[in-house]
Image (cartoon, rainbow, N blue to C red; front, side, top):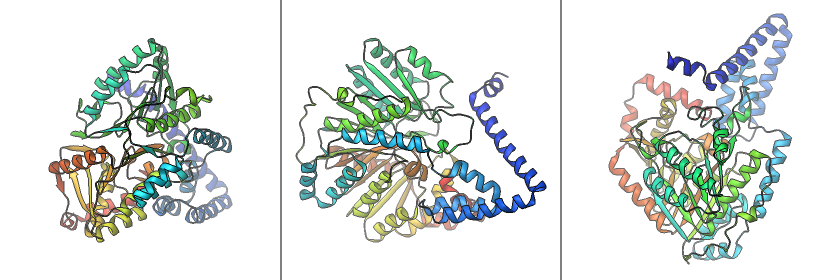
Length: 511
C-alpha cells in the first residue's frame, strides 16, 4: 500500500494525469466536431496536408520530418495538433529576444584570441579550422592548454571533485541534468552546505524533467534553506508544450573560476557504481584548470540569468589575480556550449569535422547511436577511405526501445567497414571522440537527435594534450571488455525483430 500511495501522490502522477486529460479532451472535441460539422473536419484534414508540406519544406533534419509526417498522414487531425503542440522547436518572441540578449552579453565577455588561432593554424591547418569554427560561429575562444586530466570512470572523477570542492573560497557553480539522493549527492551536498555557511557563493541548476523521479517536489526550497542558491530548468507543468522538448543536459562544475569539471557524469550513485542500475556503468569526465575554465563560468552565468531573470556582473567572477599556470606551447583547449536556440548545431558540426578530417583512426564512445544522414555518410566514407573507425555502445540497455534503434544502424555501418563493439559488463554512458593521437572531445553530447538539436549541451575540444592520449588509452583498454558486432548477427535476426527495429527507427528522433 505504501508503494501505491507514493505513486498516487507523486507529482509525476498528477502531471501525467493532467496530460492524459488534455489528450482525451482533444480527442473528444475533434470527434464531436467531426460528427456535427463535417465541413470543419474536411478543413482540418486540408490543414493537415498543409502541415505536411510545411514540414517537408522546413529546415529540420529529414528523419525528424519523416517521424512527424507519418502520424499526420495516417491520423491527419491528431497528428497535426500534436505536431504543433510538441513537434516544432518554437519559442515565443519574448523568450527568443531574452535568449538573444543573454547570448550577446555572454559573447562580449569571451574575447576571441585571433593570434592564438593563427598560431594553431600555422602548426596544423585542419585543427585551426575546427578551432576557428568554434570560436567564430559558436563564440567560444581558443586557449593554450594549462592543465587537464581525463577520468575514465565516474568514481575517479567523484573523488577528485570532492577534493576540489573542499578548496573553494569564492564560489561554486554546478549545473546538472540528473541529481539523485545517495552516496554521491549526499556527500557533495554536505560540502556545498558547509561552504555556503562559510560565505562561499554556492549555486546549483538542475533540470526539472531530469530530476522529476529522483528529487521530491520543492527540493529547491530545501536547498535554498541551506544557503545554496538554486534554479530549476524549465519547471515541469501539466500543459502540453514545445518547452517539454528542450532540456538542460549539461553537466558542469566551476570552482572559483580556475577549476572546472565536465563530462557525462550526473550526480547519482549509478554513475560512480555505488549502485548497480544497468550493470557496470562506464562513464567519463574531465578536469580542466587555467584560463580555459572561463567559458564554463560564462555558460553557467548565462543559464542562471535565463532561469532567474537576473543580470549578473560577469567580471566579478573572473579569477583575481588571473590564473597563473604553466601553459604548453604546443597544446590547446577549447570548451564550448551548444543551444537548441542557436543558429548552429555546434556539437554535430564539431563531431562531423572530427570524422571527416581523421587520417588514421577515430574512436567513439556513445550511449546512443541514432544518426542523421550526414553522420552515417561521414562514418561510412571515413571507413571506406581506410580510416580505422570504431564505436563502442552499451550492451545492457537503459531504454530498450532506444537501444533497439541504436542496433538498427549497425548493419549499414558494419557493411561499410565501421567496427562496432558493445560494452558487455553494462552500460556505456561516456561521450568521447578521439582521433589520430591529436584531437579529442569530451562532454555531454550524445549521438542522438535530442542531444544534437534539442538540448543544451557542452563539451571540451582538446588538441595535443596529454588527456588526448588518456582518452585513447581508455578506449583501447575498454575494448577488452567488449563484444565486437558482425554483419552476420543482423542477417540472422528473426524477421519480427528486424520489423520492430525498422518501425522504431522511423520514429527515432521522437524517442
